[in-house]
Length: 172
Image (cartoon, rainbow, N blue to C red; front, top):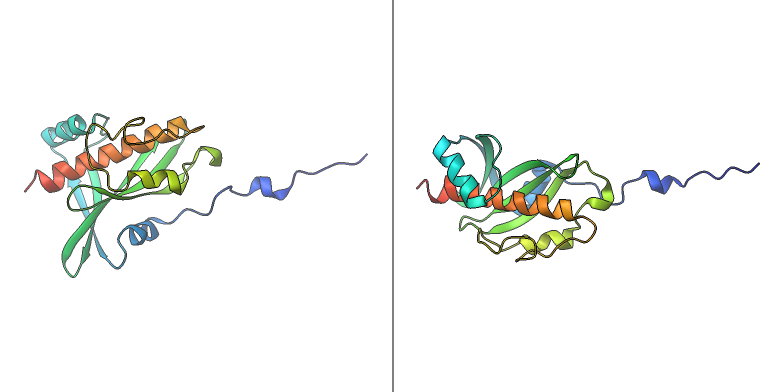
């Protein structure tokens, strides 16, 4: 009897290794220095962020990474961990001081690899602000075969933009 073994390639990931949190920040803000900043949202701030995002904002404690070059704020990075289907993904959502997405980068993805969004698809978030068109089938094209991933990423982008609005634009 001849037994055929499955090729080893099937046990390897179908995509390149994901960046670490520090690597993701460096990709989003090249040459910047980072300061970790913790926030405890008031009930009012949490409610405002939820209303702006039009998605759930779980918890009231969060961390932002302020990116500076020569002392000037060049952006803020939020790491958003959320459920995709049955498992979690963590994204870096990098936002400019003006409130526009600079980059969305996955740093953890625990669902099967075929459900992960490709970099080319994620690039469509770049330059987007928090507006009613930042939705699937609005400014964001659906992701064939990975609708739950597309929904989760779009919700994360909206949530992070809303948090940026509340913490960095309205708080001034």
